[in-house]
Length: 237
Image (cartoon, rainbow, N blue to C red; front, side, top):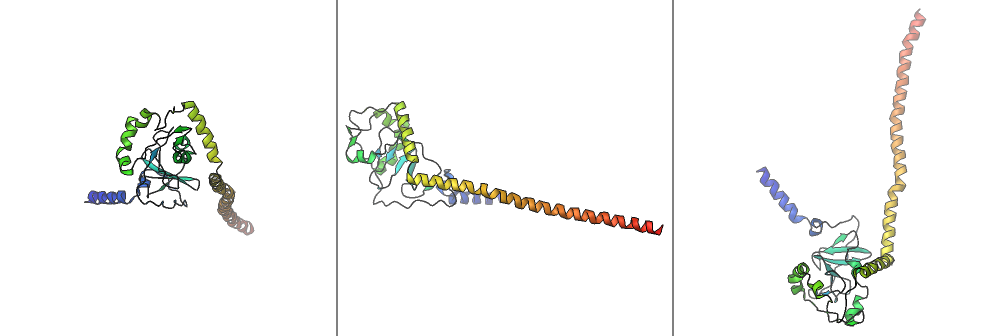
């Protein structure tokens, strides 16, 4: 009976725990979640060239990506992810690995049907078809086998060139005002415990010194009480 009751409680907890928590997303105390995005219909996506299965929702004003089974969005210098495009966002405590492969000018390339000077006949993938196929495309290397993401006459960049671009974009990302502001806030939070620590140590030292002082006084009184009978004996003699 007790085992059955315990099993019911564990099942209830598993259902009640948010998906973001189960997935290992770091939910920080005091970190606000991004505002909801407005959708008139589920978003279509486009596969971005020179990336490893990174998709973007081009019809949304905010950056909304799909990669590795998650929807991703940056907001105020932080990153958030969810298994759903319109809810369930959880704070992600670092920049996702795919992001520095994304060309910052992708929106302009998308609007002009042109990628790096080459005609870009991209494929807009409806949401339902994408949900049914993205995992299979990932497993069989669909976009890698195609090799050009619909960009006419385009040769994918070599690995060394991609790494150099990643480093450049990472440095540019760090220079963004919202990212720098977030970094300053983190540094301030890390410094606070270091400033308060000496005060706590002084208080602890003060607390420890008081009992020792009390013991010393009791010890001196005990010695005096032992000396008084000796004086009495001397006077009696």
